[in-house]
View 1 (spheres, rainbow, N blue to C red):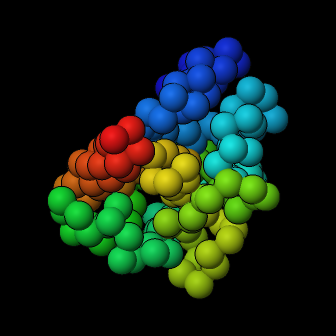
View 2: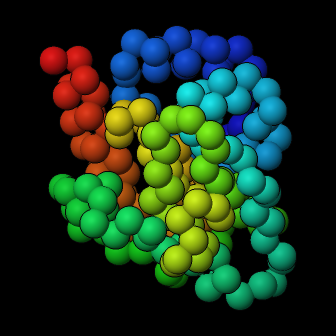
Length: 167
């Protein structure tokens, strides 16, 4: 679950520089944010904010997420996907990580913990003209019938933006 580290990110960045589409689910960013992934994050304009820790026995609704850009194609094209308000906690302790906007890049936070906070406490971001999506929570913690359509949208969104770039 957390094997993509170190030099993997060098290879991934090389591909990103060739305008590929990339979707990353990385709930362990707190372990590697200062490593080689930092070049990709800097290029995007995304920064690690902090670990999102889950207290055992806490109310699962404390781990709901809000769409910060509800009209984004990530949530509306191919499938209409509502916010992830009803987690079904699968993993104990580590809920994921939180992002903030960094300097440079064109990053946009798409989802986060607070509905009006658009520059920090993010859990889902896009950057590089929509060719990259970075998700910092585990898909397993949310309902299958919400996550699968969301991932279908991720794929449509990043590939559409990839092909716009390479034409």
